[in-house]
Figure 1 (cartoon, chains in turn orange, purple):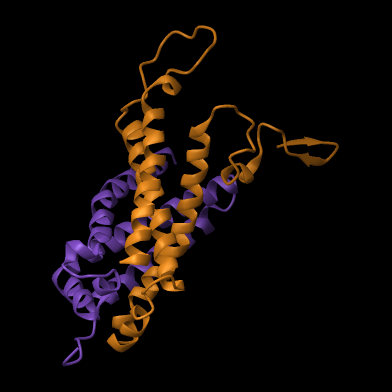
Figure 2 (cartoon, each protein chain N blue to C red):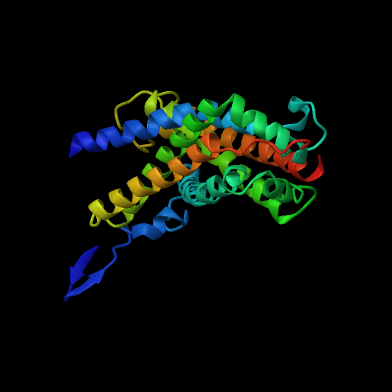
Length: 157
Length: 120
């Protein structure tokens, strides 16, 4: 942010909180890492909200009793709001979990980020050439496969 | 200040590593053919859930507290970033309250579970 004539102006390279949820705010070509970051943040926010509901609902046997639980679960057949909830929650958890493993490997254990090198034109960061990007594509692929499998189990089994 | 931030980061990473195993277990026990039943709904049947709560109660409590720590510490970090650290005290208090409330609620689910009614 910068101040000009007493008014606060948002600079283009400081887009604020909106950059957390919109991968296209920062106009960078060939940047799947940004998309992964935004998705990780959106899924993280959604999970924090859904977890509250999940803990409350799964407490039914203790709070209310087994009859109420059985009534809830009787709605978990086919495509219903209950199964849709499980499907979307699992999809969000799969992405956040798989991308989280990639982040742990690269940030925490330094796997697949490449070795530092002397900057030379065209100044491509070694981390963007290293295998972390392959890991990223693997995350997207596994996410699709596991989410589809979850859909099969939840809706059709 | 810096030490507190480092502790927060470590908390997020350590809980994340634990969650890889705990969440995998939590999801796998809902797979029908691994539980010897025919449908997803059957994995949530009263007898199955009661058995999970009584047999793996401690693991479920550890899982619940790990989840709430990871979730609300993450939420705190995002909110601090969005507000440029302006409401640090308020956001931290909110995160601590959420952790305590939902961690306790999850613990109550395990320790306060009612016995199955006879015949069902």
